[in-house]
Image 1 (spheres, rainbow, N blue to C red):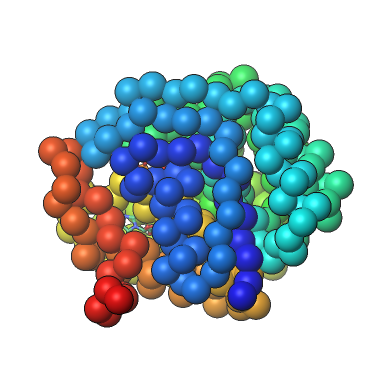
Image 2 (image 1 turned 90 degrees about the vertical axis):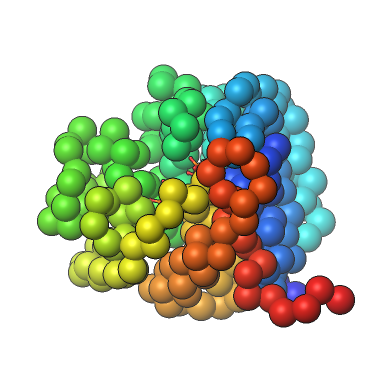
Length: 263
Ligand SMILES: Nc1ncnc2c1ncn2[C@@H]1O[C@H](COP(=O)(O)OP(=O)(O)O)[C@@H](O)[C@H]1O
Ligand SMILES: Cc1ncc(COP(=O)(O)OP(=O)(O)O)c(N)n1
């Protein structure tokens, strides 16, 4: 069985973060492992608090996995602060990790900061050059480039700018566009547009986490990156379309929508 590792924050309501990543790995037939960078108190309505892990313990979690188990892909999500970013960078370099997907998580959809503002440049400097692909949403791409992004032309320009920051391929996600849900992919030479039908519900908590971990799962299974992106988009669309009404806030996306009967 192929193995994927997520390095991210815990979401207590299970829709985003580590929990979404592990569900996605399992749903896509990959053995999932996790390194926790921070714990959030979070439900379907809001993020209420964050506790960061000690950076030295993040190192211990990563190193003990690489020392023991072959890892086919790594997804990085919420990394919280500069010390944790530096440790992740050192450990991934030392262990020659491959197929790294960096989701530059900055702020939750409910508006809670998940990355300290002074850590944004460190994330770009340390983790982007290690990545096979980075997957900013519109707000993250705006913050990284300093440009306003409201249409696909501006998404393309942002993708080129972000590519030049570290040489990783880029997907600027269009989930927050008012029309459609097209993602723009740039591999350093050409663009591809992954067009999706916009699903008219507000139940998108954890879509970014799910999309990036699905890309990591498909890379672990040996898919070329552009195919992995297309298949990840199909998977996240299905999870949104089949979302579950479990809490008083947004419905939660259904990571296992495609599985038949429970054994
Ligand atoms: N309402 C929606 N309908 C269809 N696809 C969506 C919708 N919202 C998000 N997506 C897709 O989910 C993935 C994650 O995008 P996005 O929601 O922009 O990320 P984030 O959670 O980081 O803000 C992308 O492939 C995006 O196109
Ligand atoms: C612990 C944790 N990590 C990441 C996020 C952000 O998830 P995302 O997929 O970008 O979607 P929203 O949660 O912002 O809707 C998170 N909330 N918690």
